[in-house]
Amino acid sequence: MKTVSCISPIDSKILATRELTSDAQLDKILARAKIAQKEWAATSIKTRVEAMEKFLVNLQAMDDEIVPELAKQMGRPIRFGGEVPPLVKRVKYLNEMASSALANYVPETNGVDQITRYIKRIPVGIVFVIAPWNYPYVTAVNGIVPSLLAGNAVILKHAVQSLLVGERFYKALQNVGLPAGLFSNILIENEQAATILKAGKVNHVTFTGSVRGGREVEQAAAGSFTTMNLELGGKDAAYVCKDANLELTVADLAEGAFFNGGQCCCGIERIYVEEAIFDKFVEALVAEAKKLKLGDPLDVNTTLGPMASLRFADSVRGHISSALSQGAKALIDSNLFPQSKLNTPYLAPQVLVNVDHSMEIMTEETFGPVVGVMPVKNDKEALALINDSKYGLTSSIWTKDQVRAVELADQIETGIIYMNRCDHVDPSLVWAGVKQTGRGASLSKYGFDALTKPKSYHLRQGTNFC
Image (cartoon, rainbow, N blue to C red; front, side, top):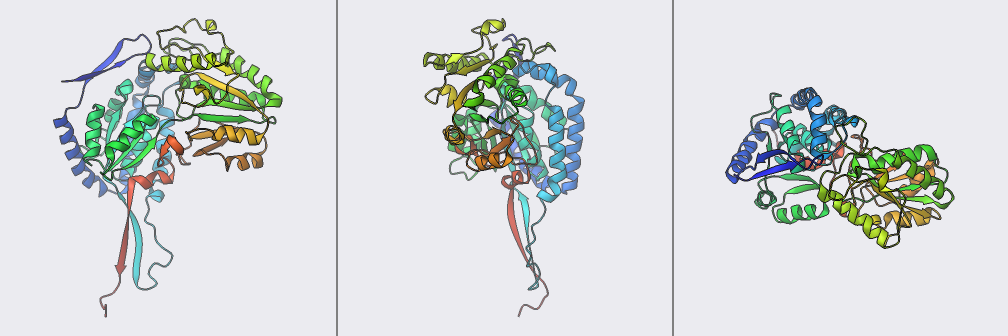
């Protein structure tokens, strides 16, 4: 049997090795899921919600083990806890809204001509969730729980870097009332995933990952009519206006840029600042970055752990090096962070100035603890630079003027807009990007749309049809 291993970024040692799911096993899993889904679709939404509440209890019982396990898999410091608390809040909200989000739609003209009309939301069938390693619980749950609430079966393929997370999901979803085979956790190669999609063996796929990976999913599913939700790359921008509360803005943007080693889907990667406050802002941002403590994520004093792998760290180093060769200036001496060393996943935070859009540090997704900062003359220039991107997940505006913020927001080409906050997910609002960031949407009531099919009912009353 083929195997895969999770290499811990802490010490570059093998943390866990697992056998890949074979083609024969995969065929049985898909067959069982199809049968189980029919049974699950016949249950009430109340029954599904109760199952998800039991799932939360099971997952919460594992939290003390999950926190250090996550640190060992992808480097996030234990001082920040795990992802179970925010996951619980998110799932509770989805549970509360499920009944209304999945309710029948009844037109206002219903019954006026002795015909009862309504539209039901019918589950699509089998949902294939391909989850990433950077926020392995809260990103995966965005696909898993709404799919189950909508009456679907779920096949989870988690990233190898966070392969233990898939096992936790599987364990937490046992004994909660799901039909056998409704939820499965698999470890398969990309070629096997492509085969599933090409053959149309699943009805919907939700993928979070790179633009390249998203293209591969689209190409594999071409002609199968499999629907999909793709959350891909990002280069999220912030615009700091001269009237912003500088202290709060700097603190929040520093967290948005450096938390989780900058490995956040909606992390801040580029900042534009009005000229009048540019120097003050940069000075304060550098001071915040220097407060970070890089080190072992299992140490409660560590605030910045290693990146998830050496490959990712080297990619970020490449972006920084390229920018410096083009004239950018680095404001943080990496010697302040002794743990930061070449040929390791440990990477010091960095703030770059003298940057522009000829540099990949300002245009390509970096996904690391580095941010470029540019001065701008006015809103027009800021808007042009923010929109000068092939990505479009989130953007943030920092000002005391909400009218100004909304006017700018209406012109910004991203799926999500923040004012005086960033790097935040609200389950009551839709999570969606534009351009090469992807297609489709998750969370909020709109997240259920792709997980269900509308089915119309025309019910004529009476027996005399003449």
